[in-house]
Image (cartoon, rainbow, N blue to C red; front, side, top):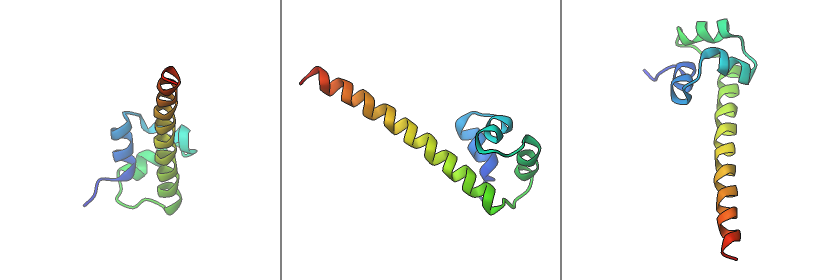
Length: 75
């Protein structure tokens, strides 16, 4: 069985259930309960997927800004 998305996300990002909940609009108790179960609601699944996508896009933007700064040095 695949690891619960709540546990996996918190572990991967090194954040607490509270930090994840604050970021996606779910309460800590809700996330704690879901983490102990195997069933995740569609809404929570989607919220976490969008949060992860947002985090990846922010990281990509930082890389692009760094690349742009380097390119400006040599143009």
